[in-house]
Image (cartoon, rainbow, N blue to C red):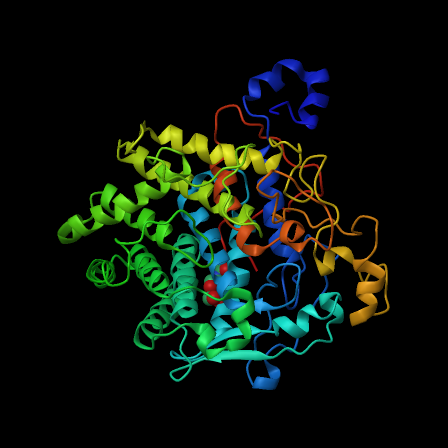
Length: 516
Ligand SMILES: *[C@@H]1O[C@H](CO)[C@@H](O)[C@H](O)[C@H]1NC(C)=O
């Protein structure tokens, strides 16, 4: 493949010279703008005046009330209406990491207001969900009964059961990830609103000690979630939370924690080839490599070097330079980890390469793989290869970001996107009626859910744009979140198109204060 994108071809006719000078076929600026719109489409609760995604209305306005707690807000996970704590927190961590690493790029693109708004929508919910130091509301909605219906969020009739963690119902994975999200968000917000940043840090520290003191997997406390987001372990989240708290506070306690527990929690033992809402080892190892590369290892330098060795393993394996122990790749050039929602792994791996490339570059360092020595630019090129595949450089010439380019999925597995909006269809759409009238509709979805990264193709680079094919056509928060950092970094590649998007324009963002 590798042809010019069709928008470029159109422009080529008029503007040949400038198109060639672009040097990149893909408009990362447009893709970035759209990926942030996806987070607006996933908002639960009372929507603000400046909501750009107009087909969504207020929903979930009494979440938590039966349980005597205000859990209004937060995000719907994917094509359904459950507010799953683990992927929501992971997504906020990834958005915040993008802002932290690529603050300058995001500012230059005038997207800081939208980026902070996306983080805050999650972080405000986590504040509500954490009413006492040792209480964390883990989930609203029940996966089974929610999936039984196909309705708009605004019409929801399914039970909004809420589940909580406390000193007798442990969940170190979920509490740890939420602590990480709030620490990362605290750093992201610090230049804009220090009191909000401080507030997030208080919650983060409390959640970390709750997670650390009352150890366990949250699925053992909330068996209902087992089928959906069962984490395979909580040790990675404890290390992850501590690593983020160290970034946010620079308190020795947290760096000592990751060093003291490096062996017992697998931080320096696990060499993994994937990063997702479940497994954070590779990200922990890369984030701690930053501390080392910045020369801040102090007494922990030798342990941090062991962390970095595993970070290198991950990067070498993704780049097929790991003495045969590589991540599988499709013929079209996509990392291939899983049949279901494979693109989430490609997006997160690309993001990690973009940040690791920055860390190495700042330290004037290289990556020594068993099969080659790689430069920071090589890591960035790899990140670009996965991003470009996502945007259309693939055997199907398909964009897997909804609404980007000319050829993208139109039968997206998403309740809200697949049913006509309230503004058009005023009467409620019932649980079963939704399936009959809308889910089985042969035509395309009535609403374009801009920016959602769908599950994507299979191991043969094949993709079937069918609403029932949720493994490939469902967009998720956790898949889309790493794209903020990834696209903002790629937008800086020399000659990338800086032109804005062709859909309704972003309101001017105010980067001096936190968005509402
Ligand atoms: C900063 O955050 C605080 C605490 O959440 C909030 O009350 C205040 O309105 C924010 N300030 C600005 C300028 O947005």
